[in-house]
Length: 126
Image (tube, rainbow, N blue to C red; front, side, top):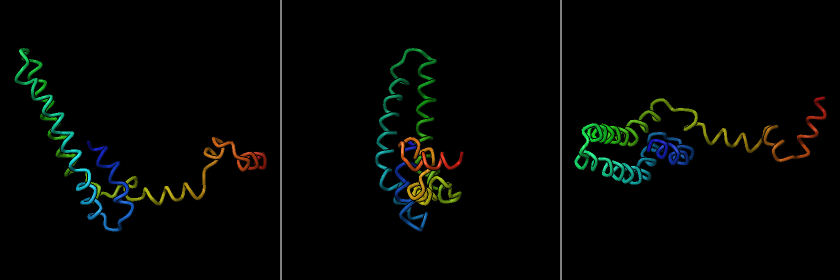
């Protein structure tokens, strides 16, 4: 669930200068999907608590459902707040680094394409 918030928040963070508004936009667009996924997973696991005759399995289901609730809350509230406070490079600087990669492809990318530019640079280096 956290990965979904971070993955889908990338266009919001890249397009806006205000990171707080970008975090609000990211949560408002992906929040429904994350909530639906969390409720579906929790509903399936909670059934084990009441339907299982094995004590260990019902205790494990209760613990797992608690962990899923905490993960859903963290994905919706804590992760976007951390992105605003700590401004990680993979969220804030993502678009700039992608533009640099497009403008100047690396030798590895040129080699994978089999381009003549890579052959020329490797010949001139030797």
